[in-house]
Image (tube, rainbow, N blue to C red; front, side, top):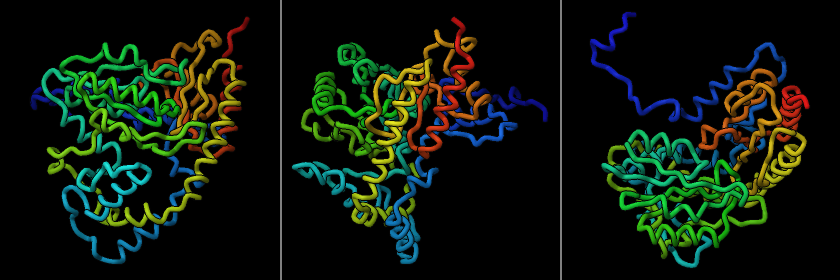
Length: 384
């Protein structure tokens, strides 16, 4: 076909460069590197999708709730723009169940099609000429992608591996100015796998209050903690600093979660047992122990902090131990080609020359993957 981009006055968006590639795009790129003559199964330690693993299969309570909603024929319609009242009430009750005061009312709950759509609504709502936003480094790539698309200037604050991935509080204040609109805080941390203490969260809230900005608290992994620290919701500090609870302006132009799914929420939240959650946490705890101990046997990798939450962990690559490998992307590409193991390059989450590893995998696959990574490390080790 004739290239007619000039005739149509078409030009790609130059802001959407390699730095804004999606997680799925990078994952697909690494899958393309697999040597298909390798008869071994592919060990997917780069993809954080627990539902892909039978060990983390969705509770039957959810299946039953959705089935009842379908069979009722009461929800074959468009939902209200801001969500079904019964679903909003169930979410509000769930979020405040362990707090002394009901600080979240159903009117403060807006349902979205997953966390990604929530980001797609919130960040454009904040965008204005000259505005900037504070994002964690490392962090979740979609914040970068969406901020870039709506022309929000990105300013990164560091998470410090030597301090268990705590926020670099000393530099946080210096990043902000009169054009800073918000700070994004992910807790428990993805991709670092750490859990923040009450005291540290309170200090973040106090700094945000001093700066006059509000906190976008990303708690997708709320209560997914399996170490010694409990999960502390940021809303406990809502008396100190505003926490994002609603975005109104854009809701009229976004898609809504399907009515059937919304109708299922009250039953799912009410009837899912503690045993279901504790079983998943036990699997993740065992995976964290296996990975942390196994990583010590791989000379070129260093895990600075044993994961305690979420489903991922960050690992540093020591290139002084390797011959002919210069960065994290090359490391992951070669590993995929030679060992059929997928790891996620750290540069994609803001930390070059690290890798992100998923713990939401079968434990036998995790052990196999660690063994293959060790063989890869030894094969590419520098000769002393």
